[in-house]
Image (cartoon, rainbow, N blue to C red; front, side, top):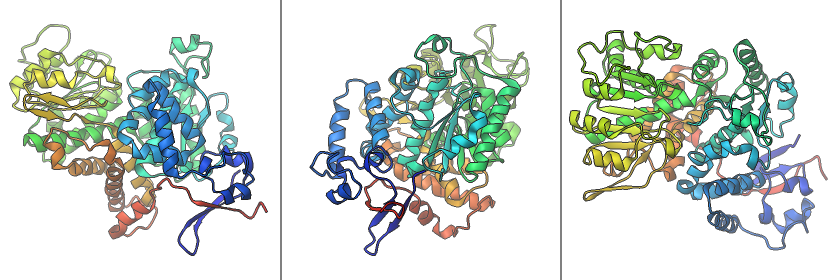
Length: 574
C-alpha cells in the first residue's frame, strides 16, 4: 500500500512526503505531475530521462490539455479524453475542469455520461473504483484492503438498474459513480484519494448487453429477492467495517429498491439517495426561486408531477414538507400534489399501485365532478384543466410528453405557470424550452435537467436554469463530513434546498433563471455544505465537536484545491 504524508514546512509551503518513485510514481494519478516535475524531483525520484526535458507549469499543462480537448469532434470523444487525463493526472484534470466548468460538466456528467454508460464496454481503457458482484462479494474485505488509499470518506454506489432515463446499463453504470465523484471533488473539494466509486454488478436484464460479445459485466440476469438483499447487506457491512465514517450515496437504483435500501440503511451508515432526496431538494429550490419571480406563495400552488419513480416521489416529498412548513396540514399538503405515472394519476381506485407510490395516492373518488378527456385513466391534461395546476414538473423520461395542449391549458389557468421539464438526457426532455415560451406567450418560468441555450422571445432573452443535482449532493456530502454526521437527516436535505433557493442572485431571476450558473459551483457547494452542517449540529447528529460560529471556516478548510506540492522522500526509501 502506498504511504504518503502531507505537511507544511517552516515557510508554509505544502510538502508531500512519499515512499514511491520511478515509473510507479509516474503512473500514480494522485501523485503524478507529468511534465511539471522539477529537475530536482526528477533526480530524487528516479524519473530523470523518463520525461521531456522542459519543465512545465500547471498553467501550461492546462493550456495544452484544453487545446487537445477542443480538437475533439464529439462529446463522447471529449468524455474519453477527460477520463483518460483523470486516469493519468488527477491534479491537472481537476484544474482543467474547474477552469471550464460550464463547458465540461455536461461532458463528465449529464448528458454525455449517459452515452458513456451505454458504450462502457466498448470505450473501457483504465479501471477506476470497485466492481462487486455475487462472484466476489465474499472477498469484500480483501478487495477493500487492496485499495491504494484507505482513508475513504465518500462512496457513491449503484447497481445500474435505473441509469438516468436509460434504465438497466449493467456494468456500464460505473460511469455514474465516477462522474458524481468527479463533481464531489470539483464542487465540494473532497480530495480524489478519499473518493470511492462502486458498481454493484448483480447482472443485467438488458438483452442487448447480454448479447454483446464485448460486454464486461456479469453475463446473467439480475439477482432479486433475498439473494439481492443478502448481497447488499454484505456490501454495507463491508463499508461499516472498513470505512465506518464515510458517507454513502445510493445512486440510480430501481424505483422500489431505491426506497427500500434508503430506509433500511440510512441510520446504519450515514447515507442518502440522490435520485430521491437530491432531486427533491434541487426541484424544491427551483420552485422557490420561481416564486420569487412570479410573486406567488408556496401554499397557494397546485402541483403536478409527471413521473412516479424515485425522483418524482422525492420531489413530492420535498414539496409536501415545504407546504407543511408553510402552515398546511399534511393532508392538505398532499391534496395539492398530483403524481402521475404511465397509467395516469396515482390513486386508490387503480390496481397494482407500487408500495412506494402510495403515500401520494389520491382517494378513489378524487376526480368526482371533473370533466375528463377520455375513459382510459385520468391524464395530465385532465389534471391541468381540473386541478388548475400552477407548477408542472417532468421526471418521466419521455421526450415531448408535455404537449402543446397541456402547456396552453396551464397558461389559460394561471398567469405565470412554472414548468420544469427535467428528464435527462436532452432527448428525454418533456418539452423544449423554446416551445414552452412560445406556447405560453412568454409567461412561463422554465427550468430543465439538461443544458439548453438561451431563449429569445419578444424583446427579452431568457436563460434556462439547469436543475442539476450537482447544486445539492456535493454540498450535502461535504456538510455531513465536516461535522461527522451519524445520519443524513431529511432536515439536512431540506436545509440544502432552502440555502440553494436563497443564493440565486436577482440578476439571474431577472432573466427567468432559477438556478446558479455552473461556473459558480464551488461557491454554491460551500454555502450548501455550511447549511447542512449547521442543521446537523442543531439536530445533534454530529460526531465531531465543531463551534457553530466557525462552521464556514471548518467547511472551507476541508475543501481541496488542485495544485502541485513539493515532493520529498518518505522514511521508507533512502
